[in-house]
Length: 136
Image (cartoon, rainbow, N blue to C red; front, side, top):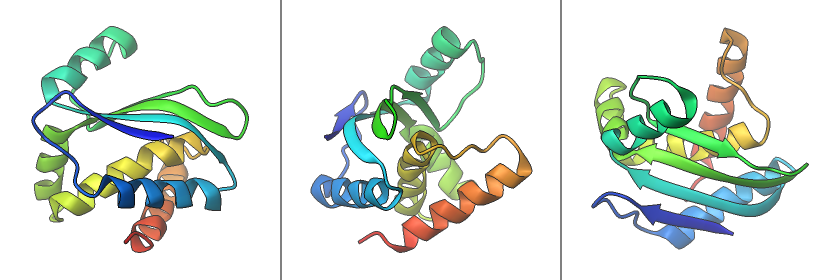
């Protein structure tokens, strides 16, 4: 089950359509959907999580905590709406498209994709682009 939670004034529109899209990605990656919680928040909120749990004193757009068991995906995905807005401007894309990229980025991590090396990052971007093209 996919759930959307809010620690900011932002509210996601079309949650049923977005949930279906996420579910289709999970299915295509041959994984099972478990409990996946998205938490939309501010820079301040996510920065505190970054400090408290990862000991990183930086702003970021997404932090995911993966509790998957085998091929069944479970986890909490925190997304800073402030960062997504700034990144959309920096990357010259729409807020909606950047948000979708970040939403699916967390799922791809749960599916085993990494982005630490240049090669891993290229594959991750390729997967993001592929699934972004398939969304409704």
